[in-house]
Length: 296
Image (cartoon, rainbow, N blue to C red; front, side, top):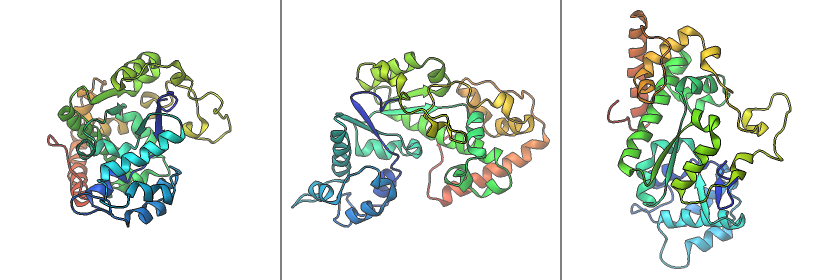
């Protein structure tokens, strides 16, 4: 939707930007770009989607003093935007919700949009996803129970985003509830454009035109469907027992975000199992070198 705006281009998901900086991959300890970063980028399959070539990268590197990582990546984004005649460029990599502080440190004026969706609908999306191993499925408890790990994964990501957003303030951080977006797309897009400092364009609501495909078996994303409420509905598509365990794992955040719990009095015997998975999940997060929210 945002990419359909005449002034904004959204790059394909990158995934490497924050991680490579934190690990200083191809960088000096101070965060300046080394020449060896270029072949690493060219071998990265996600970078290839940006359609930026070796010569362009070498020009960004310059002949003398190495550029900072932030200036170098900004140059890449500028090339992407220039090729599409758009002055502003954004990235929609979901995992960056956990890296707001790192990204803000690199780009202090960048604006962040945090899309939040009811976690129970998120569960429906992840549970049968063939690439779940990239999200909740990468945690050790996934093989035993998909509900609680997904609830904790959702809670972990959303809380880190909210926590990072509080440090940024309303001029740099904006939340959008998915349910409001699909129910009132024009209003939500207008508010988003105001936050981004660009005029609202109703072409954002027609992002799908000329792209929609009705072939059987295509995912919602690949089918380029128009804005469609109700694609996931945990109330009718999720087993009551699964709802109960999800709410036991992440009920505090469900309440905080203004969603309604379905199970007001969960069964006490479910508490022990959820508590064990919560502890294992936290251990997994730390073992991956990731942070937990301060109020975890």
